[in-house]
Image (cartoon, rainbow, N blue to C red; front, side, top):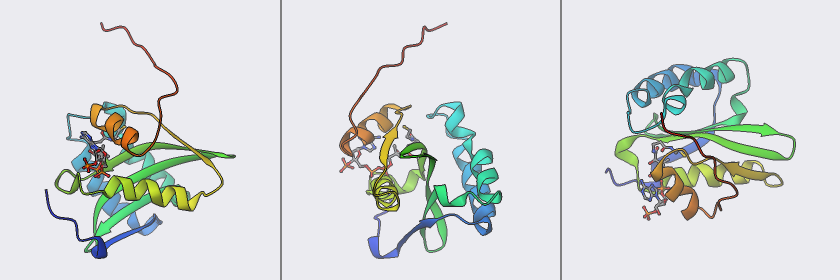
Length: 142
Ligand SMILES: CC(C)(COP(=O)(O)OP(=O)(O)OC[C@H]1O[C@@H](n2cnc3c(N)ncnc32)[C@H](O)[C@@H]1OP(=O)(O)O)[C@@H](O)C(=O)NCCC(=O)NCCS
């Protein structure tokens, strides 16, 4: 993993000008077979939001102008669901996803945040960020 120089990391909400960078980032994520299909394919949906002017719900992390992490949120009333979270492989375990979540908390200080763990790493990540399990969703294997 690359050491993360915190002073070089920029976090901000997306604008339509980020569309190309999101597209390229989503292409890399779409090849990651360790994550479920919905997460691998969420790039198009995120880009649609950004192009429709709803980019304020998409948080991006850059280093040296390179997009290295995305957190897509769904804001409904007083609730914010953190729905797609993805950090580029070579920047993991350096606190980047935690910073994206913290940014969302600061962006929506009075709303309650929820997330769904869809990978083992994701579950451990949410636990370490003080998210507690509220329910179990069961599916029978085919
Ligand atoms: C899960 C993911 C977003 C975490 O991103 P990250 O930037 O590496 O996370 P952080 O560095 O902020 O992790 C903070 C803490 O969470 C826990 N954690 C994060 N990833 C973990 C993993 N794969 N296994 C175990 N614990 C993990 C650790 O406690 C970590 O602290 P530590 O590194 O000091 O031990 C990233 O691995 C990823 O993009 N995975 C693929 C997509 C995915 O699974 N998304 C989440 C779906 S629910």
